[in-house]
Length: 225
Ligand SMILES: Nc1ncnc2c1ncn2[C@@H]1O[C@H](COP(=O)(O)OP(=O)(O)OP(=O)(O)O)[C@@H](O)[C@H]1O
Image (cartoon, rainbow, N blue to C red; front, side, top):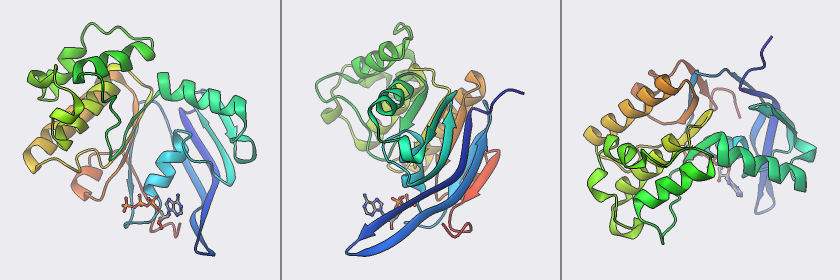
């Protein structure tokens, strides 16, 4: 039997704030196959961003096991050097991340940001301008990140993710800084690309209409996480 793209078992994470321990995630289980989509829901502070950070290796869990795209990580080993390298490789080639703060290189134009992302993932950089056009910001290709709005940066970050052709997209409120009409266009493009490329998608959102477009739903608040 083929291994699912993503398997999470018994995942736990706590933080200590001002001497108080807060269990953010506890005993979390999750399975996602290639091509599937999952809406991650839950009230503010329920752990959505924490889970996304763990799923791309930016945060260490304190319990559990996870496998992503054939790479296996146990909580007790995840902080060690070789694991850092495996996470870096996954983020470069397999996991596309669109977080609330768009992560663009300030010294590069939007187009060069997309080209760099494609090349780092081992993809052709020939059609990078088309990704910007599809996200409605083709005319801003030569501008630098500080010369465009937050919503335009967010769309450029999505273009970067599409250009790397990842196996898994992690999106944290990807339309958070967009007006309703642009948000709908961007979300349409996100689901279109997900279906066309067959990658998996995890989308953290407070928007139940958006969540309804995903095949699966995980409500962290209901899990008591
Ligand atoms: N580095 C950290 N140190 C201490 N506490 C943290 C840290 N990161 C997150 N937390 C706490 O963990 C909990 C979960 O935070 P998280 O950002 O994952 O929530 P969220 O569901 O993404 O929230 P929102 O919907 O507001 O973005 C919160 O109570 C938060 O204050």
